[in-house]
Amino acid sequence: MFLFWSFLPRPLSVCVQSLPRVLHFLLSFREMTTTREGTCCAEMAMVCLTDFEEYAKEHLSKATWDYYAAGADECCTRDDNLLAYKRIRLRPRILRDVSVSDTRTTVQGTEISFPVGIAPTAFHCLAWHEGEMATARATEAVNTCYITSTYSTCSVEEIAAAAPNGYRWFQLYVYRDRKLSESIIHRVEALGYKALVLTVDVPYTGKRRNDIRNQFKLPPHLKVKNFDGVFQEAAGPAGEEYGVPANTLDPSISWKDVYWLQSLTRLPIIIKGILTKEDAELAVEHGVQGIIVSNHGGRQLDGGPATIDALSEIVDTVQGRIEVYLDGGVRTGSDVLKAVALGAKCVFIGRPAVWGLAYKGEEGLKEVLHILNDEFRLSMALSGCRNVAEINRNLIQFSKL
Ligand SMILES: Cc1cc2nc3c(=O)[nH]c(=O)nc-3n(C[C@H](O)[C@H](O)[C@H](O)COP(=O)(O)O)c2cc1C
Image (cartoon, rainbow, N blue to C red):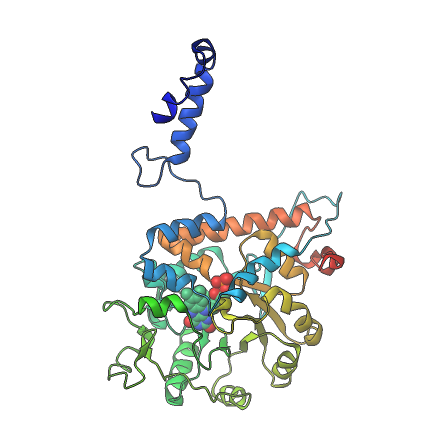
């Protein structure tokens, strides 16, 4: 109403002539300003992944939002993960009959619907009451790979039962208590998880300022379900950190532990958290089956490279001997296209999956994946690629990098 009266100082005749336009403006203004809870009930269209981010920011508690959004220290690496994609330009090809397109690919020999999977992120029950069970159902429905976090708020058994035909890998940390690591490896192997993803960038937890300010803690009704009962005893002088005693992870982990893991399991081992060609070469020499180029979404070392910037040197070193994947900052279909063009076999999304859960659980995550798939298909077609095999480095304008 205030806006309407503010039109009145103009001469009345002009106002009368403009009435239809004014009414149209007011109606569109009403639509534009309607929120999900608003009296007008016009649903906000979810068009891109940042729409889900905004929804999650608005609807999650501050401590939960801060936990998901956190980066280490000044968040330079977290933010650069996204900005680095915006510096890359494409070299599209034309007149290549893109009337039919195929986004399917394979990871470790298994077909998935497009080269985007779900990175391991902790505590999905903070975003949606069914937590990781909803994630498992969504990824099964979309036919892609879900890397289940050690720090799940549903157990590996519950996750497997929720989506019995889903394609899952299990993300592993190595604990000071090696028996604990051994037992979880045997559990996931028996449950049909298809690979172990060893996260190597957390000898200690990065300094996430807002989590410290908020004194982040899991609410009492949630637990790190995989180790229910194991950590019941008091956390000791070091206190509790993200649902487990602060000194649980083993900072002495080294390359020889890859051999130890290989002695325990026949599952493929994928190392998550490699950012240099030197470590990529060591990974190949130690006989692992894959690498995830990752900086933990910028939550560990601040000042490390954006993952898309680190990708090329690793792909060049590995020379196709094992598969190279990437996570960090993937938010659009053209980000996926750029990563695949630079040699990633598949990318994984972390925070956007949690935003999808916060929006509508299983349905919300499916929507996130469908939007990303549609955008990827469109970017492929607009750059002249009919299938994933046609995406290669010629698509990248290196002179701009
Ligand atoms: C809230 C949150 C929890 C995470 N938990 C884990 C974890 O339990 N294990 C792990 O290996 N990585 C974890 N990560 C890192 C992700 O696997 C991934 O590297 C990162 O989220 C990718 O960046 P993106 O969020 O920009 O997609 C976590 C990331 C976030 C944001």
